[in-house]
Length: 69
Image 1 (cartoon, one colour):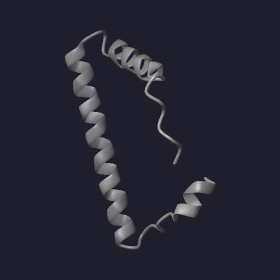
Image 2 (image 1 turned 45 degrees about the horizontal axis):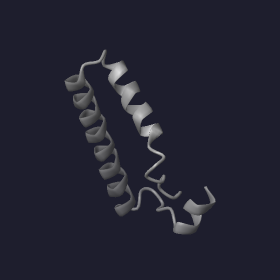
Image 3 (image 1 turned 120 degrees about the horizontal axis):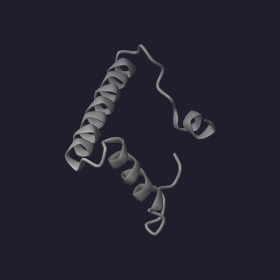
Image 4 (image 1 turned 180 degrees about the vertical axis):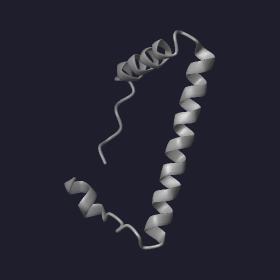
């Protein structure tokens, strides 16, 4: 996993916010709702993957394997 970006380098977050708001035609409530929905989807995906790994359906990635990716 790469190192998190430094605090002064938040311009990419500002740009991402501007893009999300623009995609929702400037409606901040719609933007927040879309982000919450996207987060819920990703959380559900993560839970499914964790369950599959626990059940042995998907091989777990080792730390060394994720470093090489």
